[in-house]
Length: 303
Image (cartoon, rainbow, N blue to C red):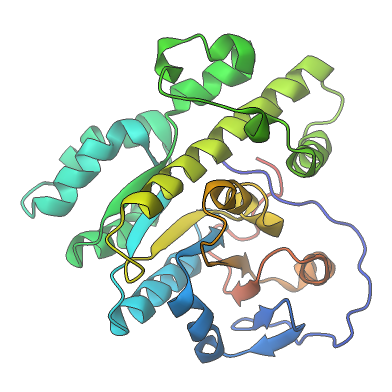
């Protein structure tokens, strides 16, 4: 299930126009290009590093591995959480990490890859294999697709009556968030024009379930981890971290003191210049990192 990313038009002039090219990392707070070494201090101090990718882009997998390497080099012991993996496959993930003789085929079956994410596993295999090789805890972030579809079909009120949601407790702070609603509705309507209002609402409520579900996994990890030397690296589509709202803000709701850093990965093409300049100025993330395009070329802005 692809995430909905921002659709921007136009661009205001930045105080210092960045040189946009592959390899550029832009620190949004100071509006300056920085080296990866300059980002390191923020990464090493973080309780959660939120990485936002464009799906099926090898350079974004490589960026995530670079960050994990950085943490391990400095005696951090990171866990890795991935949007591409779902809760009903967590037992299979645990077995795959612990059992070196478990095959990829068995892993895909036990993790319920096809039932949930469904895309080509080889695109994400290097990141999963990294966790396995280095014995990192690997966490499934996404609620099962069946629950998300139930919300999209029936609406949140009726869906919550399903036994599959029995362990959920959604409060008003979860569903009544004007900042989140304005951001997501703008994107839904831009990507899916002229749908009935009730359909827009159900798509929005399905978005709530995914983002709240992912935040729940992260909050649970922060509550149980051995200590600050055990940060979490969260790897999701960029739409789930934009402006710190969808997932990061939900984590902060119960862990306000948690130190977080958001890194928004962009597979660079010159045609994206105006869009990226606008995202930088508007504060899309703490850092914007431009990487090479993947073999699929430019990604669609709606999915």
